[in-house]
Amino acid sequence: MIKEQSQKSVYVVTRNQRRIEDTNYTSLSDAEFRADKLRAALKNYDPSDVKRVAVVKTQKPYRIR
Image (tube, rainbow, N blue to C red; front, side, top):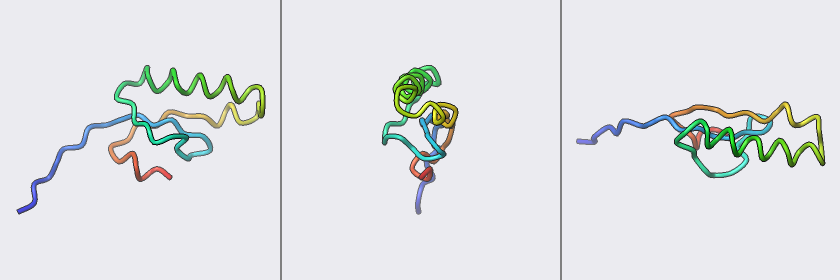
């Protein structure tokens, strides 16, 4: 018999709807902090991509491409 594990929600930072790294954040504030750092770096290279950075809450983080 296979036991089902209840999966907790985690936060993932994405850019253009793709994960930027393999890190899963357990708190929204940590994920937003990382997203803000990415946005600051993108301002120097491609300011139009700043608006494409998002924090996604999910129970299946590795399903996000």
